[in-house]
Image (cartoon, rainbow, N blue to C red; front, top):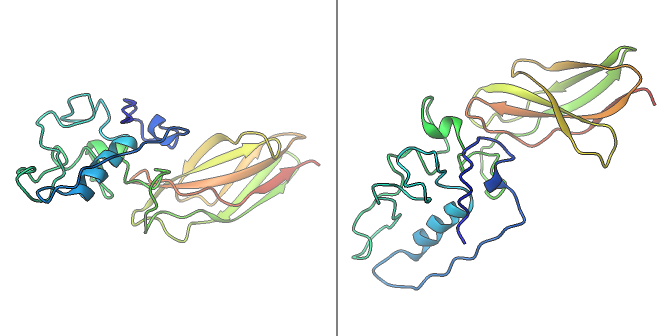
Length: 212
């Protein structure tokens, strides 16, 4: 079953980016068509393409113009086009102003179901120190920014090892430190880097700080 959640938000918590659903695609091999491209087409649907508020969509997961067959050759696929103007299904390097620059884009590193080379990596060497009025974090930037400048760092913390991580703040991508003002509490912290394409890398190592 195709996953058409209608969620166009550019977020790791996008509904198309969650389990525990799974999909199976079946294909009949025919010399006139491309089975591989058809399967890939269906796979993009399971990962959230095309969002209902995307440009040119028929609000049922396809392009309104019908030219998104993703076929490569043969009589079954005379129209060799896939992407409603190349800015709706996916784009690993969207330009500012495009729909996929600010909305769900299955080619971004935050997609949990695709492993991409050249993705932004985690911030390094996160450490925490307690100064009596709060915990100050310091870190080193990621080894790779995914081919785009850094935009922000997201700061996460949790009160115990098995507690959920909560994002408590977002700071500029030029920052390498952050102070969480708290009195008498001990937390675990992690940091995540986001570039200007909204690609988000994995979380950093854990650093703990505060009163034991």
